[in-house]
Amino acid sequence: MPVGRWLAVGFAGALLLAGLLQTASSLYYGLADFSRRADDLRRADAAARIAAWLLPGSDRATALAGRLAAAAGDRPFLLTSYREVLREAPADAYRWSELARGLALSGRLDADFDLAVARALALAPHSPAVHGTLADLAWRYHLRLSPQQQETLLPSLRATMRARSERFRLLEAVVRERRHPAFCAEFAVPLNRQAWCGQVEAELARCARPQKLKAVQRRWCGRMGALP
Image (tube, rainbow, N blue to C red; front, top):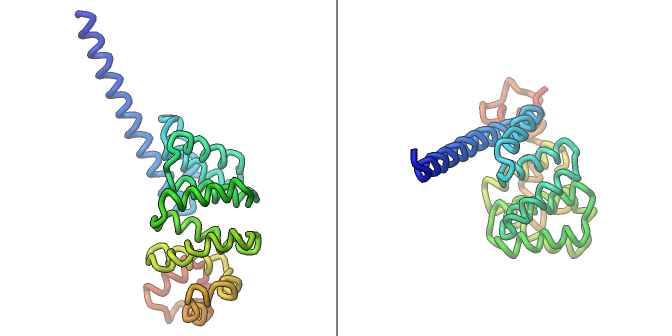
């Protein structure tokens, strides 16, 4: 077979192998993401490691590995993962917001944190996903943030309250962690959440009587870990 044909066959084989690796990595990435959302972190971690091994340069696999590292408490690996991703994609606003989350988890509410927040907002000022991540930081770390940091993140909280899916996710996290008293004391008026704050305790109390719950109420109570 002529050399040119061998090269063509070899090139086609390399492309095929790359495609198979990409497909396999994506499948394991999907399994890891699904498992993470189901709070099965052991399976999620295993799947993410396989995804990253199959395709080491995969932005998704690296970033997911970083999120899993955060859940497992490996803060240095979390920060390393996001910095690696951002070196390849410096204009990725969501990754900047995730780096800010990683810095907050590591107790580093410093100039690097401020830079990550500023870059995320500058690159995607209207992104619900970016605002959702920063809003999460705003309420979780409120007492540890400087007045300037609180002022910078408050618009993300307001934007998240206007985005239905992000609002539900944030408020459910507040209740699931039973941090609604502190959240309401600080944000009920600025976010116009007085009605929600007034009824959340009643909703939790209703969970104690599961036999009287409708299906949708039972599902909510289950997600909040409030069923007896």
